[in-house]
Length: 282
Length: 269
Image 1: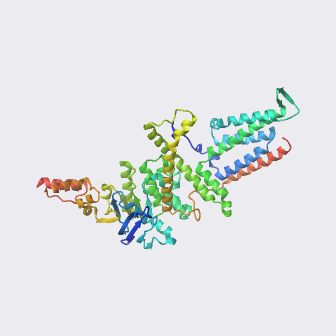
Image 2: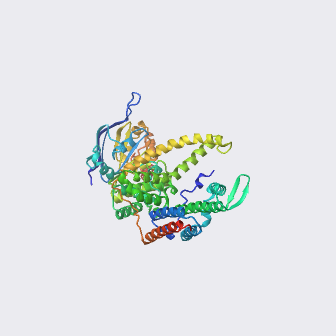
Image 3: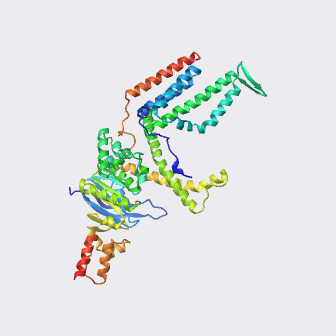
């Protein structure tokens, strides 16, 4: 279970030169993503996090370095389908990734492409829709669903491929708070109950805080990598790359700046409250 | 202007035997029906066709009113055809003669039959779109045309394009609504002025709509690739089209009607 499902070795990527300038998007990224883990990739706009994500299922190919998906080099064109079946991808705008005009037809799209027999497609579609809690909407038209519901249908569409890993590129950026919470809950359930590896690209601190591991990117490089608690306690470094920290960490950090002895790694509201209580009792 | 009110495909969901027929059966039946309509040429044959149509409508449970409502856009063509046939059919039995016009008995019959033919043609095709969802229609067409794949005709691609177009129509309508509201908020005027002025007002609406449609297309293509789309080769389908007893019966019935009408028509009935 602990093998690297995705392995990036010194990955470099730049878009074709325009007017003499070669924009370097990825500048030597090394990353191992273990099977079964929940990794959040945090970064500011233009940090290269989405570009990195697109390397994980061979939508983009590295200009330098290598990406391996379950041991297969993404440059190997003959095994493209195998790579894409292993790592599924969900994008920001749910409208632009739903193909069919009935929910269950859309979820069936990937298994249909893979030539799965009809009875097996039916089983996978029902299973995937139940996993995201959209089974009762299976005969609805997608455009009549809410943003959060559409995004969950999009996730079901990927799960129906039965991938080992799901990469989500800012899946909650266009959703309202309720939709965001639903999608996040779905992602976490998939990770915990089905052991699907999750890579969540985001710029929401509170989403990133829920992962097992947090990778921070800036200017095409990985600048921090560790548990969310460890990463968020480096407040100054995060600020330097244009990121803020969760409100709890921010509060504790401000208190520490004033010379008070509080731990910086109390990330959840409860832990933070405990830390403050301990402080007041002293 | 409420763009959202536009209904597409005019599909009436239902559970009648006509709804449950395989889409391919309905497509083929409509083709046979149209052929038979053109073979019909006198009262007996038209009466048979009318019975077929009325029977189908009755079984489908589609309200006659909504079929009649669908006729509105073609009223002009029907009237035009009727007048043309009325005035320009030569014959021996002259009924009325005035100025340069002559109306013959043959002309009256011909105009009458033309009108009935057009109206029945439209009703029949309406019944198809009223009782078959657009996706099923696309599936049916793909399946019926699939023999042409051997001639390298891009049948799968065409049906994919059609179903994606159907999928994105409501999305694009919603977007048009949004852009219109945004432009109206900044003082754009879509409602007043003559036709040319109004068409000009739509131009700044089309540009952002096209740009966004292209962006959507690109994102959709990436998302489809991520879900292992690689053309029609080796693809299976969730929903299998299957001919049942009712389908064979319907096809046999329509074939029989077409042959009967063809034969009777030759005898001038």
